[in-house]
Each structure stands twice: as C-alpha cells, then as structure tokens.
Figure 1 (cartoon, rainbow, N blue to C red):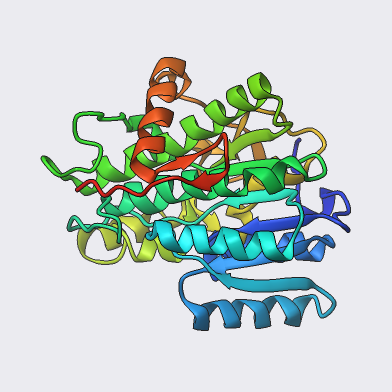
Figure 2 (cartoon, rainbow, N blue to C red):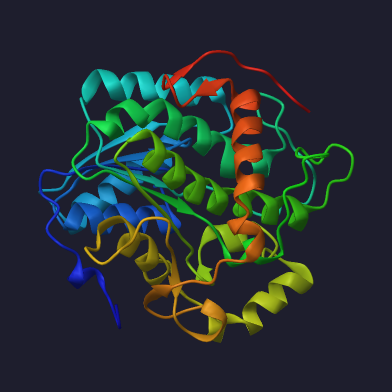
Amino acid sequence: MTDWTIDDMPPLSGRLAVVTGASGGLGFETALALAGAGAEVVLTGRNDAKGARALEGICARHPDALISYENLDLASLASVAAFATRFAALHGSLDLLINNAGVMSLPVRQVTADGFEMQFGINYLGHYALTAHLLPMLRRGRAPRVVNLSSLAHRTGMIDFDDLQGATFYKPWKAYTQSKLAMLMFALELQRRSGAAGWGLMSNAAHPGYARTDLISNGPGGGGLMGVFSWLMRPLSHSAAAGALPTLFAATSRNAEAAAYYGPNGFYEMKGPPAQAKIMPQANDAGVAAKLWDASATLTGVSFDQGVSTATRAFA
C-alpha cells in the first residue's frame, strides 16, 4: 500500500459506480478517477448547475468517459427514494456505492425536509436510506463494494441516543462528530450484516485527512479565528485529489479489506498516501452499532430486508 496512487487502480471497465456529493471536492475527484479508470459513473448532487459543470470537467479530462448526473438531495428521504427508483429503472445492478456527501459543523441548528438535524440527516441518515434502497442492485453487482466517508472527527464522537437530533442541546462540532462516527459504525455494521445474511458486499470506510475542499471553507474554516487557524494549518493539509485517494483505495484496490478503515499515512493521518486508519473504541462497539441501525430504520422507515421505503417519520 506504500505510496499508492490512482495509477495503481485496476481497470474498471464494465463497472458501475454511484458517487454522492460528486459535483465538487472529494466527490468530484473520486468520480474523475473512477471514470478515468474506465468505470461508468453516476454523479449525484442537489445542485443541478454544479452537476452540469462537474460533467463538463470530467469530460474535458476524459472525453470518452461514461458518466451521467442525477439529482439527489440527501436532506430529503423522498428525494433519496426517487433517485433509487430512477436508478433501478435504468440499471439492473450496481458495483460501487461511494457515500461521500456531507456538510460540516453548521453554526446554527438546521433540519432536513424530514425534521432531522441537518448534519445527522445528510451525512448519515440519508446515506443509510440510500444504501438500503440500492441494496437489491448491489447484491446483483460484480464484487460489490460500499465505501462510507468518515472523518478524523469520529475520534471525539459519541452516539447520543437521548438527543440524536440535537434538539435539546445543539453544538455544531458535537453534531458533526456524531454523524461521522455514525458513518464509520454503519460501514462496520453493514459488513457484519452482509456476512450474516449473505448479501455478498464488501463494506469499508475511508477518511480524507485534512483535505482542502469547500467543506472546510464553508464550515468552521470559513472565516474569523477559524479561518486564520485553517490558514496556519495549511502545511499539514493536502489537495482534494490527494484526499480522495483513501476512498479510491477502499473502493478499487485488490488489497482493500472488508470492515477496514483507510486514511492518509502522515502525521495524525492528516495527509499522505492511503494506509490503515485508526478506529476508535466507540466505533467498534457492536452493541451500539446494532442499536443505531435499529434507530435509523425507525427514523427513515427504510428496511434493508426489502430495500424499499415502508414509512417516513419526522423527528425534530
């Protein structure tokens, strides 16, 4: 795995990938690399104008790329279900699902269309529902993989079952770290359940380290003292393209493992080529992961047994 780059990716011709949040940043770089390796890639996002520009950017680099764009708003369970329905009508199977989209440390509590705290809703619950909806197609895929984007922030996260939506006590960083811990726990629990039920998935997770993306500039690094801090930390950061490498390794490498977690190999996993990343003890708590899975099924009304929406409930 030493100094692994996109040049080490295997040929992906005949493989179909879905990348969430692919209109910019890490998602765009992930989609660009997958398309360059020959995969057919469905880019998703909630801003159609940015999606069109992303398609243009990838086609400029790879004129023969097999790419398309679909609207997908992870802040809306209806949008998630509609995307899955459209996708199933066009494709019989799915090989790679990259759950990448996210928002970071929103200063004021906001809620999704379904009443979920925005970070927990977009970063985690939307991806939980999306994966459940796409499970039938994944099970028909060729060596299917699901990669969840977590973060170094998971290290300080805790799942607060008494206040999952931050309705009683909202702190931007608390909500963000919980959502990214949930994404890592989801990846590990999905692998456990796939093994037990025979779904045939490889589920793993990745984090980008400290990548220079809009997620940083639009979140806590957007201005003021945090903006200065981000500028001072720039030498410890790397580009979005470099930050996408752990995701690409998890999604494509023959050496990637199920229930593994990948990130940069440099100081504090902030930058560098992909390597095994540190998983904090709370992320390995299978009991909490099972409880979170059940809570997510109740909140989203989506069943992994059926891959269809059975109900939608809003919790503030």
